[in-house]
Length: 431
Image 1: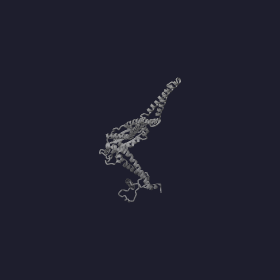
Image 2 (image 1 turned 180 degrees about the vertical axis):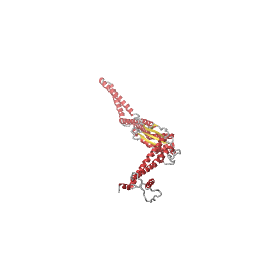
Image 3 (image 1 turned 90 degrees about the horizontal axis):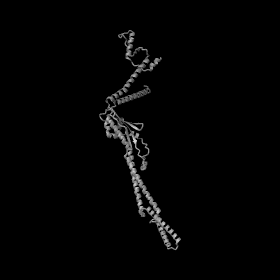
Image 4 (image 1 turned 135 degrees about the horizontal axis):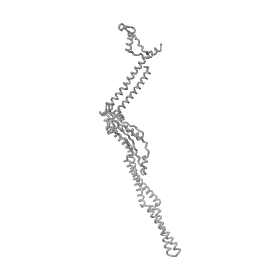
């Protein structure tokens, strides 16, 4: 068996070409000088010779097979890629509702209240001065894409009615009875959020009307601002409540200290034991001075006139002063109840110190409460829209080209994947 014959057996049978067969018949009739009238009848099983073109029969069949595959590929490319791309272009250019995009950029600001001695205890307890580990940028990103945001803005601008309105083209229109998940999917399709370097967010809001797009963007920015403010509202309320509770505690402590001091004074029948002790000390000092003077005078008299009657008078005076001094010293040592004045003064000093400390604590707590109320009235965390929502023009051409290119690339990718899978299955199955 020759090499050409081996190739012919491996190649698929070439398709019949009526034009080529007709030409071959005419050429054979011309060479045999046979007219069509006396040409012998051809039996159905006879094969006519193929006209020699200078190309082997196996190579010619391979060329024909490749041309057939090329035509099939072009047909598939037109059906699976060209038609969807053309329909998408025509729909977006002439049927789809126009699109408008309102873009804005937001960031957040965190207020740090000043630290003061009066509110140091409150702030340290609540962690007001501690560095926050909460990433507000991520929280804002998730909140704008959440169902909570969708429900809030829907109650303000009736977003569900807008998406299901008759002015929207039938492919972009949402069913009025769509479920919440479908509604959220529509919302995320027309509202996109991206996190940029620097801690700010870029929000693109699409709508079918420029005024509504700008209005929806403003509502989203305001809702994000309110959410950030609400995050710190609970902390501010807790700070105020704690400060008010401290004031109430210090007030009760001061009242208790004053009652204890009053009970002590009533028990010992002395309003000011310290003053009384000072008074007794003064009397004892005066008596000691007088006693010292009398003794000096007695020594002087005895030295000059020992027999003088003043000696007896002076000695009586000294005895009287000594007796009075004993009495006063006894009064200074103990009160009427027999309690030593040293112990009495210690208790009285402790009660006085407690009253003064309670009064100072109450004053500090009142100042802290005033600062807490001031901080509560001040917004600590808030959103800044440094690039506010704009009113854009119609972007039909941009969206048309974008969607057309997306459909073209997607259909080509699907066709390539499908062709690879079909080829793999054919080779595996021996097709």
